[in-house]
Length: 441
Image (cartoon, rainbow, N blue to C red; front, side):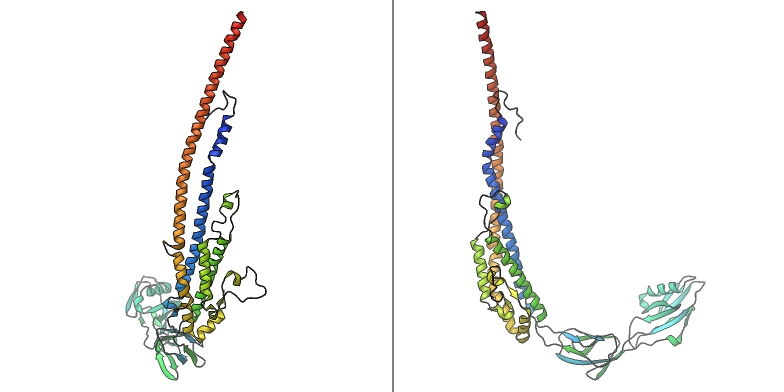
C-alpha cells in the first residue's frame, strides 16, 4: 500500500501525478505478463476442451470393438399379446405354435363372518389367528394378512370374507375354520392348472409362467388364445439394433472433435488487442500438431471403406460450399445401409468396423497417441499449466518490486519536498535579514 503523502508543499509540483505516471511506465512489463498469462490459460483451456472431445471419440471406438457388442444373441417374440416369450438361455431357432385353452388359478373360498363379543380364534391354513373381542370383518382381514404362513390372502368383499390361495394350480387349497365362519359352498372355486399345447403336444402347468415347454424359453400366458400363437426364436447373431446406435455415437463424437479443432486452429490472432478476450484469440491458430492430427484422422477414415457401413462425408454436389461436410471432413450416417449390411453379411460388417483392417483398429492408435496421459495433448496441457504457474510467480515478484519502487519514489519526492521547503524557508530568512540591513542604511 502506498504511503499517504501531501503533494507540492515545497515545490508546488503535483508529485502524486508524477509518481502515478512513472509507475504506469514501470507497470508495463506487469501488464504484458498478465496478458501472456491469460493467453497461456486460454491455450490450456482450449487444449483441455479438445482433449475431452477426443476422449469421447476414444470411448466410442472402444464401445465398437467391445466383445459383448458382437456376441451372438437370440430373440424370442410372440404373435399374440396373450403369450409373451422370454429367453432363459440358448434356445432352438424356429417357430413354435402355442395354444392356451385354460389359465391357472388359485383356490378360493367365501365365508360369512360373525363378530364375536369375546376373544376368538380362526384357523387358516393350519395357522392360528387370534381375534380380540368384538373384532370386525376388517380386523379379521388385517389379522389374516399379517400372517404370511397361512398361504392365503384375505379381502372383504360385499360384507363377506374371501380367502384366495397365494399359489395357483390344481394342488392349491384354502382351509379355514372358526366359530364365526360359515362357508358359502356355492361360491367355492377349485385351483386349476394352465392347459396348453406346443406344436400340438398337450401340456399343463401349475402356473401361468411356463418354463419348460420350449427349452430355453419362458412363456407367460395372460389370456386364452383364439388359435395357435406363433413364438419365434431367432438364429444366434449379433444384436444389430445395438450396433447402429454405437456407430451414430461415434459419428457425433468425431464430428464434434473435428469442429472444435477446426475452430481453434482457424481462429486468427488479433493484432494490437485492446482486451484480454481479444488477446486470447488465436492461441492455437495454425497449430501444427493439431492440423497433423486432423489430417491423419481424415486420411485414415477415407481409406477405411466406411461407405459400405453407411458412413461418409456426404455425396458431392454442385451446391458444395466451404461449410459442406464433404469439404470440412465431417461424417454423415445412413443407418439403412448399415442395417442392410448387418443383415446380409454380419461377419463382413464386424470386419469393416473392428477387424484387423477395420476403421476402429486404424483410427484408435491416432486418438490414443493424442490423448494418452503424459503424451500428446495431455503433455501440452501440463506444459501450459507449468508455464502459467511460472508466470504467476514472476508477476508476484514483479509486483513486490513495483511496490518497493513506488515506496522509494514517494520517499524520494517527500525528501525533495522537505529539502525545498527548508531551502525556501532559509531564502525567506536571508531575504529578511538583507532587507533589515538595507533599512538601517
